[in-house]
Amino acid sequence: MTTKLRNLKDYRNTKDPRVKQKIIVEYAPLVKFIAQRIASRLPANVELDDLISCGVIGLMDAIEKFDSTRQNKFKTYAEFRIRGSILDELRAQDWIPRSVRDKAKILDRAAAKIENQYGRSATEQEMCKELNVSLEEYHSLLNQTQSVSVLNIDDSNLFKKCDKKSMRSLTENRNGTNPFISINAKDISGKLKDGIKLLPEKQRLVLSLYYYEDLNLKEIGQVLGVTESRVSQLHTQAMIRLRSKLKNKISEEDLRAA
Image 1 (cartoon, rainbow, N blue to C red):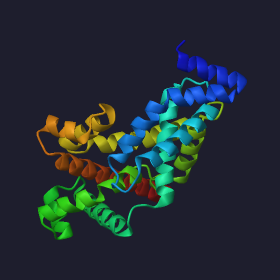
Image 2: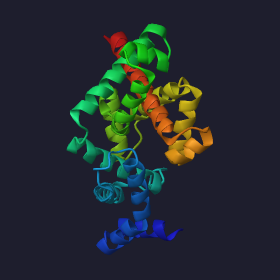
Image 3: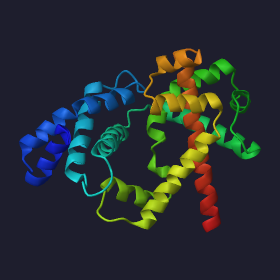
Image 4: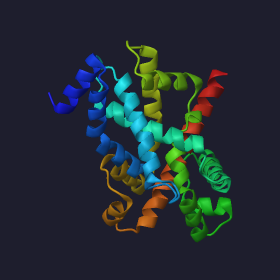
């Protein structure tokens, strides 16, 4: 058994605050890593130290609520809690200017309209035509709204009430296994996977390299042979399309259930 796991087990048995402090110190690099990843997609006025502080709160919450009787690994659970705590604080602060949010909504609506019309993802040329802007202006819009995607892709409004309930139950890590919760969690995951499969190849590759291979935007640009700014645009386009697909799927299901 590793030192980290042994300390976690000791704390669960003793609730000794000194042991809890050891665990926090041991997982501090993980908190910093997650905070840096999120900060890389945010405006410069957002302080990294503030994100790290929120992440530590999430880590402390994970230590208290982790259920060692389940099959989940603590590191995986802690990552979920740390990221969630940071995003919750960013949402609460509402740091994104309204003008940027409005531009993001315009992009979302245009992408959804084209997808509903043609049954596929919109091309850049179609987005430019729909928005009545040049390609350069469209890319500028993507650059301006890139920071919105870090929050909107996790927006609970994308999920139906039953999905929200399932997500709350999963994040609280309650005892026992609820088949209804498991099915709905898989349904949410399935919607995302289906959406990702339909993305253009470069956008899929950007998501894969960024979220699964932990490459930064500059490194991804080197792999694809494009600029860092272009990688950022591809990432934002992917987020817009995923949000559109999720909203469309949920709207269709709500109509069938009505």
